[in-house]
Image (cartoon, rainbow, N blue to C red):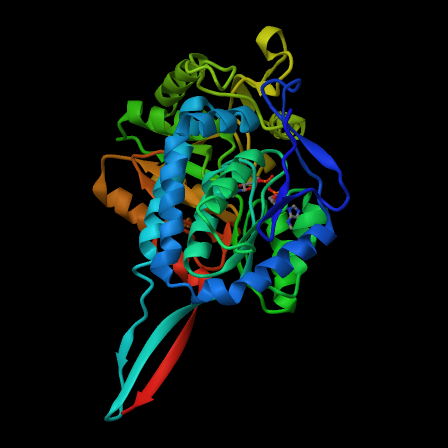
Length: 482
Ligand code: NAD
């Protein structure tokens, strides 16, 4: 089994404490995918100092030249899609098809931001006065810290690293400890494009020993974080003390609204996909289906039949449709919310059993679960589960469905299934969410359009697409008298 090192100042180094932690396959916990550095504050200090030292030269490197590193990395990631997807499925537990899709997304993100190097433009603004020329230029922010979760182990590091680097920042990346190796491979590939030493640094380890000192470091000028809202709020408080920039992408409690005129087959497909694919572990996953009462019975029958037919098992088997939970803690959380739902009067209509026999014996497997009669104010209807547990709720009509959908503190993604264009556009207007999907699953996003939520789901400038440069650059305003 391989031991993987941190990347600091262009060198692959062990952590100062010389300790490691295992990266475990959630489908078979006997399979240790690799050993990673269990780093601490001294490693963070070295990485931030290296990034600070590399900043002047990298920030002055022409942006199109910076972009070419991303293009080379895109080509290499694409060449190694099969290998990286297998590693991703093995350490994270999503199906091999989803893993291939995620690696391909990383390729597209790298290609897109490679081109951004030639488009990092400012504006020319007319002056009130004669013979005054006014314009803006974009400049890098400085040393940036990127803190990522485990559920998209290549796409999320990639959609932060690519814009950060092309905009001329230097970076310290801290991936999540449950699935750090795919991110490490991405860093290896980027470094091998000939990035100057110190431009890109990687430090693995826990949130407490690596994440916390990294986001608190006075030389870190901006922090892009994706993860739970509890961690995100703590980071925002730390950053506020020194006025560092923050971008937070956090949890969701995303609804799928099914109106009585919807194409029910499509509505069932959208719900199944966004509730149970990736084991429900997507920030944009549907965890509430809010269905008009006229079609609730029919919708439920079809959804239960489709869910029963899902193949659960080894994510690297191409036939599998749902893999394991990431770890024992996440599995327990799903089961706890299921029990809570029962206590609050909801009815389990399908699934929810832990799978522990035969091929499931060494993994964190659970059958996808559907509960009905869930009260809108109950914990199951209000809190993020991050597992394959769907709350189905009845709506009297469209207005009631919208009210229930909006009555949560999160606002990431929301889907509506209807053939009525007026209703769909009314929902686009009224939905308290940053992403609205019409006749599509609530999960499943593209890289070239802004991504982010409202309310407790996000804070700071949007990620991805042209919006990404707003976070990774500062605007300088120039006045010239001629
Ligand atoms: P988490 O908050 O536990 O961890 C995220 C990252 O933060 C990890 O790298 C972790 O080590 C680090 N961290 C933990 N404590 C820290 C601290 N005190 N200081 C700095 N860093 C710290 O989240 P998770 O369990 O890895 O991910 C699941 C959560 O992520 C869910 O809530 C999910 O909705 C959310 N998520 C959101 C999006 C989005 O774009 N909105 C995308 C994916 C996941």
